[in-house]
Image 1 (tube, rainbow, N blue to C red):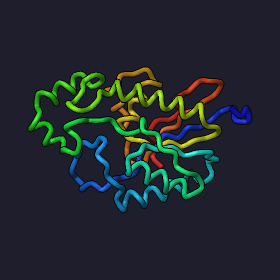
Image 2 (image 1 turned 90 degrees about the vertical axis):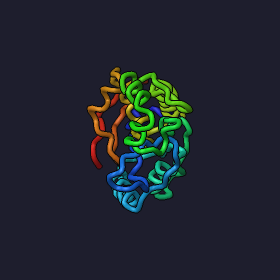
Image 3 (image 1 turned 30 degrees about the horizontal axis):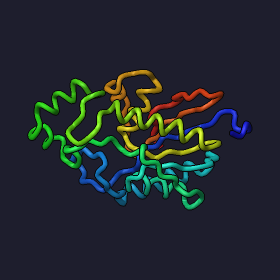
Image 4 (image 1 turned 135 degrees about the horizontal axis):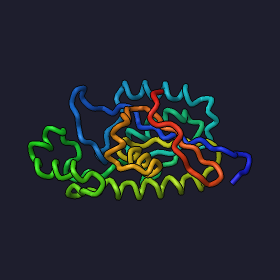
Length: 203
């Protein structure tokens, strides 16, 4: 690794708004939804914001809403490098349902997951703890293979698991932070130590 970079900034950005109906609260995991027009406009604002942040590379989840966000921010200055383990939590059979539908169709499962958010696995999916394990492994691998300041576009669930790991808190406690569309968290890497410097600031 180039020693020129003493302190590296890792910008962890949630993708911008996907093509979903206003006022409808969907449970979206690996369901592949593109950005909305509003989301593309917001990503354009992020492009301007990151223009002078000395980025050396851009990484993304493989899902359209994240990859589109990353591509707009990179603006052809970088090739977006897709990393599958930055994909959103696999929420199994709930994927694409509204939360009202989930409560109606699977009331006991919904309650059980709420009481054991870290380890509960929705049928066909993965637990938040499993997501955290793969996301943190991918994060460290990405840092090791890159230099300088980097940007990673991912998803709310993944970002919560990373916050949970770095702050040594339960995933349920990360809901004190609102991980909004297009918002960023700042990680720093120095002398082999990865730290969370700022959580979910609005850009």
